Image 1 (cartoon, rainbow, N blue to C red):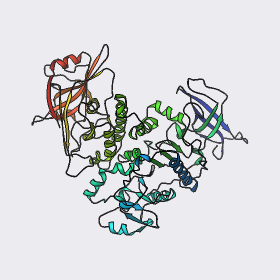
Image 2 (image 1 turned 120 degrees about the vertical axis):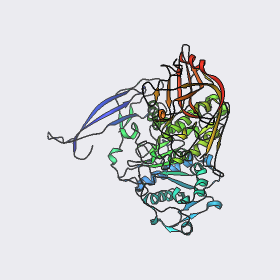
Image 3 (image 1 turned 90 degrees about the vertical axis):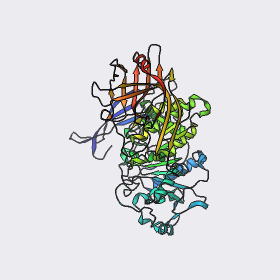
Image 4 (image 1 turned 30 degrees about the vertical axis):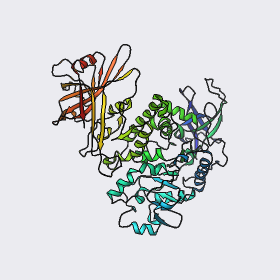
Amino acid sequence: MPNGVKNYSSSVTVRWPNYVASFLLLTFQSKDQADDDSETGKVIYTLEPRTGRDTHSPFSEVSGLDHCLSDCTGSDSTLQLIKSWEETCAKHHDCGLSNRTGWLPTRLLDVRQDRLRLVNPENLDARYTTLSHCWGRAWFLKLKERNMNALSHGFPIAFLPKTFQDAISVTRTLGIDFIWIDSLCIIQDSKDDWEKEASHMGQVYESSYCNLAATDACNATEGLFFKRNIGLLETFDVQTSWRIEAPGFRDSGLYTLCPEGLVRLGDHRYMTTTSPLNDRGWVLQEQLLAPRNVSFGKKQVTWFCRECEACEAFPRGVPIESWREMEMGGSLFKGIFYHKVKQAIHGKAPDTDEGDAGRHTLYNSWVMIVREYTRRNLTFGSDNLAALNGITNLMAQKMHCKNHAGILYRKDDTFTILQLLWLPIEPTHRPEEYRAPSWSWASVEGAIEFARLYKSESVMSTIEYMKVQTEAGNTSGQVIGGTLCITGPLASGTVFSKTHLPLVDRWDNDQGDGLLGRAGSTETDTDRFYDIIRQAFFLVMWRTRGTTWRTFWGLCLRRRQDGKFERLGRFIALDSTTTLLQKHAVIQTIEIV
């Protein structure tokens, strides 16, 4: 109970095994309660089962993980807890085994001495940490061509901003001799060096020992550590008088009462969508590819590896029941995204050798990755393919595909067709600078959603080839051109809007017989669609059907003067409207650029 509070009301959410939330109202009173008007505080608590289905954590039976909360996330006790998590992971897990290839970045920062040195680790057997951070607008030391020699000869740690200093302190606590920081290990005024390093940025994080995340720091000067109210982290063991009966659930009556933010609202989550760091596009692959992550938030420090997740409030592991509840809720970063995507990209999901089921799992993971990535921001929009290139190449390898402008391409592949049916979630625009061919999601700004697999589906178009052009020597994923050659049913018509809605409109052809009709809709890529074109072509690519219905999915296109096509959006034709579409469509082979 907060100091000075005599009447303390709290709403408690009980997570039942059938995922239907019930609510209790608890009132805490001090022993010396008086009749005066006392300050009243309110905190919402969550009651989490301590025993039952799937509640075992890899940390649960390991000694040395008892933790005394302090008022600062950088206290000795917190740093020792991080060290205990790391030692436990190294001893009991195989999180880093797949990355022990001997690969090292071009440059690392040597932190073994008081004076730091920028080194070429080519002949070193070095473990290293990485740092994920927000740059912000404040000035701080960066690697430039003019100061490379000076940084190689050594410099004091005081030259660095606080976030870097704190990260070096944690690195030393873990017994690691080297750290990789983007602004100090990539020459910031060299385009050639940036392109070279960006091409294997994913490998930098995948081959690291541990990634340190300045999750709640808005810039490099704020640091990793924060003062906090430990009362918001304290949990309590509760013995209930009730027992729950549910299939597969054994209720002993033992529960943990904890502030709601620790579990239900996901404040302990590494990739909570409200933190400054997790708004950065580059950071997504850093989070997903690193074998271990330590997230430094304002409330507490959280540990993530490929085996488990723990935090200061739950040093032996976050309750598994909360993961399940979060999965049922469907939020990306409340269970589904982090755990399922991590499993997929690190080989714990079914592989493509297991057939369609394995590839379906990988595809769904790729859908979630692109959706989350495109929600985030980039300082330079032209980085949109480079900032995801590491994950894209890894997913392409797992699905036996090629990475073509952010599309995982394989000839005669259902999943390639589905990726081409992407859609902006909100009205957006295409930037003036070229980023990708119009058939790629990378050609527009904003969050993207891919088409999902349905039962009883059929592919209606065939990809003849897909190719992209890049600048010589640039392997960062960025492209300067691309062509999709595809054969399928193509219909044309004069387009007009009946309702003037920017994204979903009814369309007629020039004969006025309702090409898509009132049961069909188009979903355009840009919010300036009607300023660009009034005649469109409709390429049918996908069909879903049931016993009494069918739906056509496809691309809305415009034809350029050179005869090639550009994507304008996606369309859906429903039920009887598909007959009208088939009436006007002719099988053609076209090129989309």
